[in-house]
Image (cartoon, rainbow, N blue to C red; front, side, top):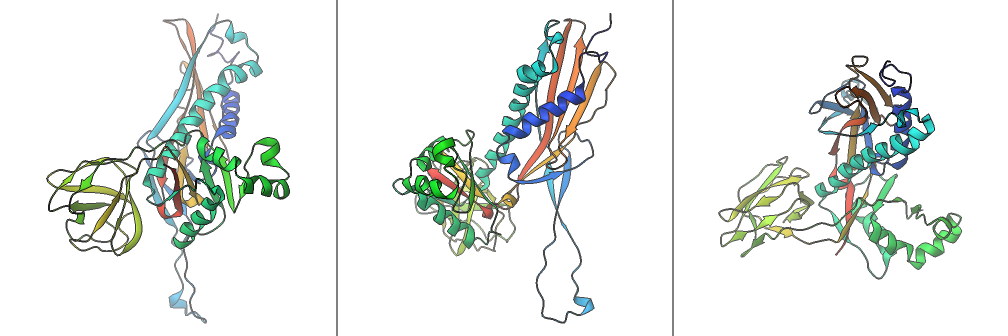
Length: 383
């Protein structure tokens, strides 16, 4: 008797891929709120794709001469597809007799949620590229919002939409704030009091996310004070620092720094250990202006029990592509589903292993993520 799955009698990979995609979209956190890109060409892990962004124009005094007309040069951003994750489960002969609804509820749905959680965690990790911060107001929680807005406004944030992802402690902080409760009763039909939903406040679309976690800072110390170690040009993605007396310890990914005379805050993008009273720190964003030798550098090395992030969608990007269906029909059945609006793609594969007489179902996704502009985001920290 032919195997039920590979013969197509019990399993439709396209149906389950689409059911899994529905579940995926339901539980995605940041993935629904950041800039998204999509390439219809199947790719492999490690491939580089380009995301197209609209061009930028500057106003000119009228009338504009023909020779002064701006070229339409859209901006392309390269994103590495370095995240390939999936879930796989084994089906018994009894489970093969499940109805489609049972399969979705007991296996496909939970499997898709596992993939969605991995996508979300990878996006939450991008907050380590953000050097701007606000220590939450412990006694007047709603003050977080105007202060975050001020930072974003100063950094020339494009404005609406604005998102704000909060972890469990920040969520609890706002839900107990009288200003939120009072505003809630008249502004949005009592959603907070009735449903426990913070919804939109102070121009921010708030969403709770369990993947926002703590930050453990490094222990780098400069006895006499850190200085730039050499003159460095605008656009450099590293910053060389030293200390004539002693520079020791480690700067952890997600720690931040500032340079005298430069209003930009920079994040350390990888753990860096000082050696020989010097260190070369990978930074985000790239240097926004030239810097001379011997300029004072202030390191911010502070633990946080939880960090949320307020951001404009163009601060971060998610890029996804459909995975290849090569091998479909050759011992396996493969279906790929793509959301035409978000570009989020999921592949479903089923195959039979005659050695173990078991049927296996796998769901996987391939994506890349990138910080586009860290100056469009602010980390909100709980000490």
